[in-house]
Length: 406
Image (cartoon, rainbow, N blue to C red; front, side):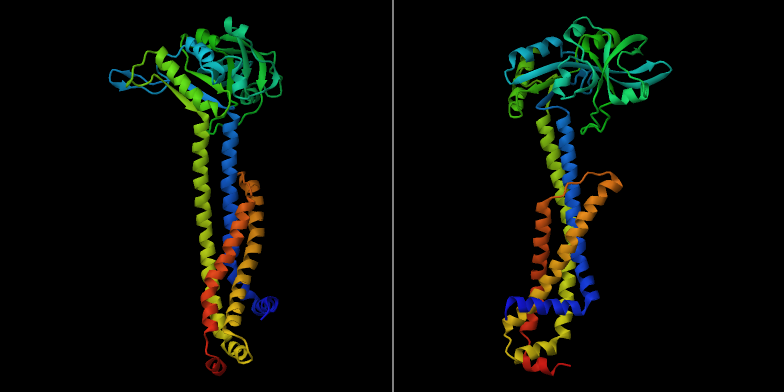
């Protein structure tokens, strides 16, 4: 029997019981739609994480002061006082894989402007910090190395600080007070968004020279961290090794002793988050694909019922010359057609769901063409797998007994 003729017969058989065919395909529709939507959701989250990590700066390494043991109590990271500006200068001078480095220290304080005030983070650093973080200014100018040398009272504010302190007023040129000291606002940072690592608002910050923070706010001379940009993503691992070796040597740390600092490579962080989101995507796809299995079982059940209902028809076809192979192909193609129809409708429902999810929940999605192809192939494979047994059962019917069947 020709393939097209078999397909036409299969479509007529499906059309005879429209409601039953629709309900049978429902499991495949839900399965395919769920797989597409869940994979889109997982990949959307993966892309968002990578964008947030990229927003932290390119090829970035974070060198932080380490932990210390005081009276038998191990204090947290950032409690050592051994990271100095001379270390930053040495990294800049002696690490060939390093492109840019900026000293850093931080504090928190209440910022006052007129009758308004806002509690925020203060980042003390160098002008190169904005280049390392790939963080352009929305307006105004960056402070200079001269401002660092003179510990000048200048500040650049984040967008969150701008909204809460100034509202519709232009902040550039205004004066704010921190610890009763006046600070001149010289710039406003562009919007950065939330941090992927901590979920904190990166725009809720004031940036100023690290010397100003050390001398006028904290009253110390050591650094809490240094931000480093390697010459390339590949060079970031070489830069990490060079920095660790240099600081161990400068801090006279002997073999076997713990470091009094740590170096965190953002490339490692990106790889870790990428692995986590990939696992999440696969898990979501696996859970959604269970609906395809359930749909396949429904197809097998309905096809077995169809074989029973059409036993006399099968006998007549065999009596007029249809072979076992023809009968088997007929029922197998009916099963595949049910799956294929469900797959097509499932694709449309998955695309609609992927369109609605970000608008209803705000979650990012990224529709994958590969996921669509895999879902369709899987749905057809389900039709073949679960349709084979009913088709084989129909083909093995005895023609004489089938003709006698009432």
